[in-house]
Length: 528
Picture (cartoon, rainbow, N blue to C red):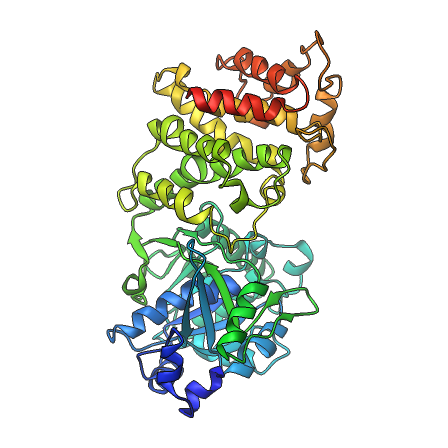
């Protein structure tokens, strides 16, 4: 069983379907032909998240029979991905959805009709220029990670042949301007706040430099600023897509699926002809398009207003997902866990995050309307975090905790204060923050050491709690004021917020000695 057999027609569809493989229901050759002649969508970034999510929901849209164009992927960073994960399989891939029940769903994704290397050294560049000159092009999108939107001074000096992604995109937008100032939407699908603004800032940095250097006319910048021509909508994307999983590879091999090889490029991109991802997914997009758009809503995307996208993101980041992740990661590290899914089998930890979400965070959630906050948390607790296929570790989630606390907990506390809510309702959020002072010691609950995860403020904050010793009676805890008064770490002075003393008393319990972390966690979770 090989992916290319599907295109050639030299395969037994009944055999594939009998083994649980969901095959494309559309005429791939016809879609590829129409897409080549009149493309509507180019996506930058050919990584696993693209194939598992944007390409997959387009595949679902094509399966409805209500749309007839595929997506063209352009890789700006790791060109081996095109050579090894796309070309050998005629741009087909297998999406393996990892179910929380421990089973998998297997779907062939055939919506990608071309895979191009976005660089001047390849003939593919001219193809991209031709595509950007087509009036039919509606949208370009991105999953290049937040760092992909960076702008380097040296790259700005390269003129019209930059190396970084935003420079290349700006050069292609200039081609679209030359072709008649044609309209287009520039859509980020990366998991970062107000992502459309990041694309816009990158594009404008290059355009403004080129105008200043006399390389392009000022009218090009006017074209980019014209919201009837070019838009940069926001989106919120949420789907965990880990590296190809060995267990999945073994399950596919047992099926007789031959394209199960593992690929690591020289740039250390980890990919495969298959991509495995969690079953739960969300893509909420600001509906601000100037030249029409692919109907991704046929595959489950939600189109809405910018304000609603912002509400969904705020719900996820400040209350319904990210704070739960951080709380369980800090305590998970101290309790010796190495898998998030294993933590979810711990009754104390499961109840801990469940009560943070439903009891303490929910009173300040603004319902975005398009996603129900209670259902969102329910999916997190019952389907996402317990998923046995998700190899995520509390040690990874605990990275850069000092940078996350102001948003993940500080914002909730601020809203309690602003809305005049009862601060006595906050118990487990203070316990999370108290746990941070214990986590910084780098000693597990059983007394053995562990390495706190990388954090730009780690050494500085560890110095603050250095005078404290685990198991020492009658010690001076006054150093904690230097920690919990730090608005740069927690988003506000926790003493001024009325929580400082409460947190201090919890820290004392956590420092009581071996087993104190478990005992303190159980005490407060059980009483809540």
